[in-house]
Amino acid sequence: MKYISTRGQSPAQSFSEILLGGLAPDGGLYLPESYPQLTDADLTAMRAMNYRELAFAVLSRFATDIPAADLKALIDKTYTSTVYCNVREGENPEDITPLHTLEPNLHLLCLSNGPTLAFKDMAMQLLGNLFEYVLAKAGQGINILGATSGDTGSSAEYAMRGKKGVNVFMLSPHGKMSRFQTAQMFSLQDSNIHNIAIKGVFDDCQDIVKAVSNDHTFKANYKIGAVNSINWGRIAAQVVYYFKGYFAATSSNEQRVSFSVPSGNFGNVCAGHIARMMGLPIKHLIVATNENDVLDEFFKTGVYRPRGAANTYHTSSPSMDISKASNFERFIYDLARQDSAKLRELWAKVDQGGAFDLAGQGLFKDVEKFGFQSGASSHMHRIEMIRKIWQQYGLMIDTHTADGLKVALELRETDVPMLVLETALPAKFEESIQEALGQTPVRPQGMEQLEALPQRFVVMEADVEAVKGFIQTHL
Ligand SMILES: *Cc1c(COP(=O)(O)O)cnc(C)c1O
Image (cartoon, rainbow, N blue to C red):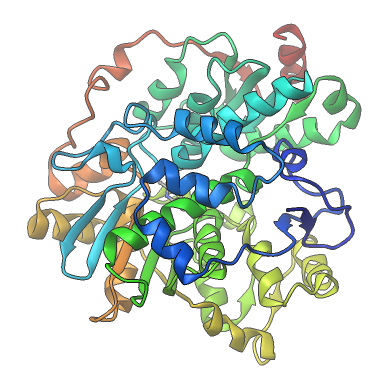
């Protein structure tokens, strides 16, 4: 299996070759040359598999240049009930992604039982093990530089801590993350993890990462890399739980289900799209946004108009506060039937801060064939939904999952099982739960005293040279 760029002007590469990189050299995103196709017999065999077996069945079709025994060992080490241990009462940790049935044909697929209590652990934990493996084979190292406002940074740090050949330098806005998220990251004592609190806002952190990455000499000399949401390995690992959820909610391959996905960078729902392209019987993929509804606007009107950081709302589902959905290009490439010239034409506008409009073009009508629907939510909706689910089912959900549920309830069809992806546990967003329910969520075992642990971080000015200097002296 080779990987090609959506923009069509980069050489084809193997899974291992694209694993450590970000964008393709032509500015596009990597996708497999074609999607593996699963037969009914394949699905029947997969139905009987546990999470690790399923992960191998899916990922071995994508990571064809990693010897099967090695891939299997990496998967077996990753998807254990010890890593994904933060389950609710009544859930079986061996399921890895337990399915929680609210009522007939309405389920929550729980993806947040990993170490940082958010779905990003599902892929990131595997990525940590894959990075270590690929780097050891090549006799190389990598220094991951990233910016975070919470979820991505903590998930990357918990995946990369203690990994040989990997250092992490994570920038976060000083004093602007929640106390829980700050404590989660800053309490890590691993010598390969470096937390840098920047005196500024998230965009200052991101600007520094961009400036360092654009210094090509520095980047090459210090082997600077990233683990951002466009990484193909993350998308591939996320495909697995769509299969797991489907099998848990159905008893025959004749049945179809729909998924509702709280969306930001379009990474999670992109994995669902790929599962569907591989032959998983998915009826609808519902893109649920918060007030930052760039994607909802596209699926309703055909206009894709990224907003820019200055016009991004800060909401109570902060991990969905995006101005530009970085994985969206992967879907549009498929929508355009792999026409990379068309893709270049559309993204020539996006890359200059503009928009494109597919309304009235045959292309936009095809969105339906790909199963996509969308909806948006607001702070009031989230609070109402958290209350409703608590009152009706005695279940506490977080703000992002609430966005997914709100849109799912609007669009669900009575005879089609609806699976809402739970993307974080409520303990991560205590302030909103307090507002909705007048009580704080119970934390998973061992996290009760998180804020009391010693913290390891440095505070720095928003200064590119200072950050470069810090990296140089800490390698
Ligand atoms: C990252 C994140 C999202 C958005 O996922 P995308 O893959 O960026 O669409 C939703 N909810 C939570 C809790 C997240 O951390």
